[in-house]
Length: 110
Image (cartoon, rainbow, N blue to C red; front, side):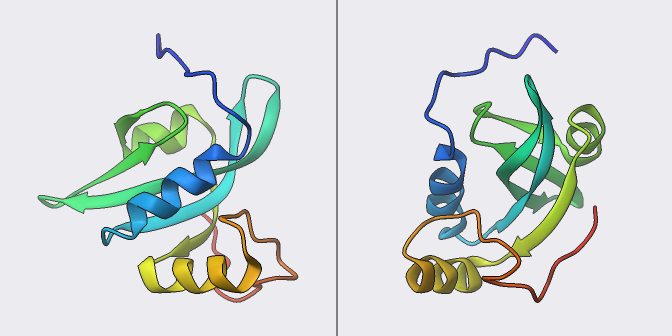
């Protein structure tokens, strides 16, 4: 794809998504294909003008949702709105990920 990946600390995507979702979009935690295999990740899903988009804070760009899910072999596991995400962050004192023992309800497939 020719996308330049920014060098960032692992797990920073969860903090970035937390900040963005407070503005009213949906956060998604799941797994994606990465350079070194599959791993946990967080991204934002946005619906605008009848289309669905993904903003990936690790890559620093937006994608068409279908393209993103296809290219990165995405498995969405937990979709959250601003209120749920804020409640989880306050309860667990971190931005994510939240494992199944912490919050099992609302798991979903892609």
